[in-house]
Length: 419
Ligand SMILES: [Zn+2]
Image (tube, rainbow, N blue to C red; front, side):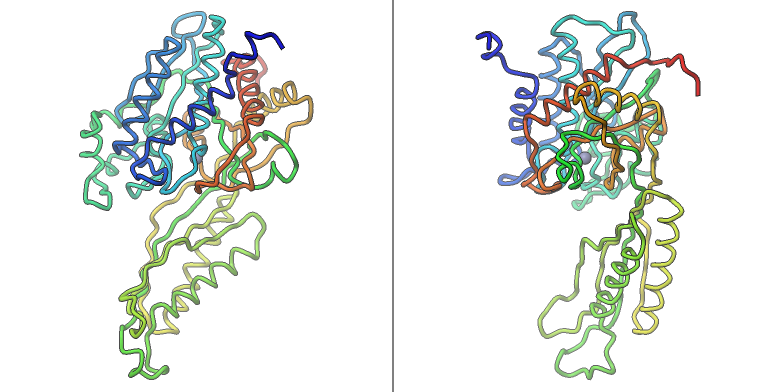
C-alpha cells in the first residue's frame, strides 16, 4: 500500500473515532445518557458544528435544537437531498444508535468537499435533537418540527423535574415560538443511515440492508387501582390485589401479540405501590408498547387488548385507567428511495440488496410526511441496541458509507421517469 494512504485516516475510521469522542457527551458519569436539550446535548451539538466547520460547512442550531448544515449544489438554491439521524440517546445507551447516521451524513459531505465535488442537488445534513422521547412525554420532536408537524401543545409538556419544553428550549438558546415555523423547504428526499437494532442482517451475514417500511406504534399507560392491605390479615378471597391483576394483564398482552406475525407487544416498565414485602399492592402503573407494520393490524390489537384488560379489571374488582400516550402510523418507505438505495447497495456490495422492515421507529417515518424518504440499515452485533453493548464493525461502517456516498452521487432530485 502507498504510504500516504496507509497513514491517512479513512472516512470509516474517522466516523468510528468521532463516535468514541461523541460518547463522552453524557448527562451521567458512568453511562451514555444524552437527553434532549441537556448540557450533554448542547456539548454534542457544539462538537458536531465544529466538525462541520472543519470541512467548511456552516452548521447552525435550529429553533427545535436540531443541528443543520447545507452543502450547496452546482447551482445555488438547488433542491436538497437531506441526510441525517438523531444525536439524543436513551438512558445507559450505546454509542451508535442515531449518532452513526448523523456522523455518516457529515462523512458524505466530507467525501464531496475533499475533491470539491459539486452535484446537481444540494446535500443537507441534520442531527436531530429528540428522537427517543426520553425527557419529555413526546418523541421525534426534531423531525416533527422539520416536517412541519410540530404540535404547539408539546411546548407545555414537562420533564421529570417539572421543566417545560418551552423553558428547556430557551435555556438551550432556542426560540420556542420559532419551532412551529421550521418546516423544511425544497427538500427532495430524506435518507437515514441507522444501525438495524435487530438480528436479521447478522444472521444472514450482510453488512447493510434497505428498509422497506417502519412499524407503527401505540403506547399506553395503564393504572391499576386495587386496595392495599396487610399481607397477613386479609384473606385471599377478599383481596383487590393491583399487582396480581396487572400480572394477568401483562400475560394477556403477551399472548395477544404472539398470535399474529409481525405484531409485537411489550410491557417495559412497572411501578408498584406501596412496594413492601408485607403489603398487598394497592396500585400498579405500567406501560404498554404495541407495534406492527400494518396500521389496521395494530389498531385491532390495541382495541382488543384494551377490552380484555377492562374485563380482567372487572373480574378482579380493581379499577383500570388506560391512557394512550403515543400513536404513530406505519410508514412505507418511498419506492424511488428504496430502488435507488437498492441499486447503490448492489453497486457497492456486488450482491443483491436485502430488503427488510424496521421494527423500531425512526425520524424517517416523520420526514416521510414531508418528502420521499428511506433508510439504510447497518448490521449491529447481536441485534443489540439501547444498551452499552451496542456494537458495529469498522468494515460494516465502511460499506455503509460507501453505499450512502454512491447513493448521494447518483441521486436525482427530479427523476425523469414518471410514476
Ligand atoms: Zn435511533
